[in-house]
Image 1 (cartoon, helix red, strand yellow):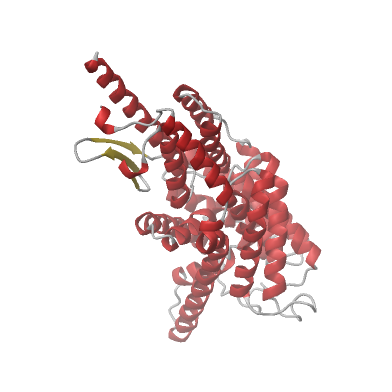
Image 2 (cartoon, rainbow, N blue to C red):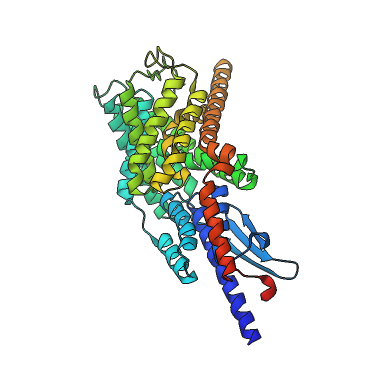
Length: 463
């Protein structure tokens, strides 16, 4: 009987470790930040009765490992993470499940059933609807760069073609980075063709700058900065490398399209007529921000009930950034003119602070709200300029110095803006983690203590 009990307990432990790894795998493959993965896995382990002092969790971009051990016993399991994407619905659902399982005293079978439901749930938006959302998101970016509304439609059409091209290439098994390069080429080539439509728009070249920005990896960029600030350097560097490869693929596709079409320019107001000076009213920027926020949220598979939240958050973030960053002579007489870096920090910080309260009303993780709201502020055009300048190296020495200087300035500006956006998103965790949701944590700990008293915890010496 003792032998049978031993085998049964060991079997239960291995099953729980397997479910714990599968929970972490879903979070990693859905692009959750590393700190959130740790928190959710620890809550799941507490529900399973695995004491934290005996539990060791290792998180890598491609591999998860858990070990449950003491001085005499050790049990380890590994799990590969291969199908990386962005799925905010899965992240939100797992966060709710880890609390609900403890509160409602789930059985292991109930937990496994709900976890399988989350994994197998189809995306909220079909590929065609997602492509339309991504297309309009790029059109919203184009408005931010100063185009008119006809150019907004043209940029959206070109982005739709590139997004669908990438979808079919990935479905056919083509390499991710090559798919990105081809999608950028298709979008840019289509945008070049729209320049032959006479008199349709007063800003015919702006779609060239915005049509491929659906490729800009905003979520990995923010997660990279967040991971580095939280001390998760290994995962952060892997995310940074993956992001850099995606950006290189995007730049290569765009540059090859421009070379194929015979277009060369340096992004100056007097060259090819691409002025970047804002001239729209605030309501137009707000509308464009809402469109971009909802469009990118569809790419991230945000729950449908939160689309309006993403739109409202994007309006707050972009309008705050414009108010802080733009000079009075650029947009409106009541802007501060402090620059894009300070403006990006102000916009993301304000949204993040509002989200601290909104998460209780909306019952969703903080990052689902904040990242969807701040993505329209990602400086895609500066990243585009920097990469294009590095690729299109001129032969003339004087022009080479100007081009490299512009590339460095644009690259540093884009990096500082991305860092400030990520810092604003991370403000609640960085500065106030110990005080956020204190009551919720206390309630959770009481429920865990009750499970201990009922004997629901696993003790290695009993195996």
